[in-house]
Image (spheres, rainbow, N blue to C red):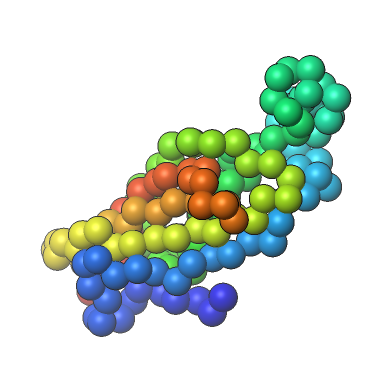
Length: 142
């Protein structure tokens, strides 16, 4: 995906932003994320323990999927412009799920410091199940 920074004057409220598509989540990716994040809960890496916990198998860390959303945000706006970013987790992600992060501009407000752009986003899988819903506010300088 080519960087699409909302730094020009042509974007508008209601505009859909280019989706970020991730390759299928892998078990190895979950093990690596556990090491990087320090979250070694075995429901993310040990199949039989996740089964015993009633999850039907290992599940991805919610913060991994939030990271995908953050990656999309930084293709839409410069990282330094992001003032608020929050998400709500809505469904479990499993190995093999292909995540796509979609965004839409919901508001643009002119301030003395620049344009405050509000974005809603969601991470969905290949079946259309929403994994994460979120919002972002970015202040783009004049």
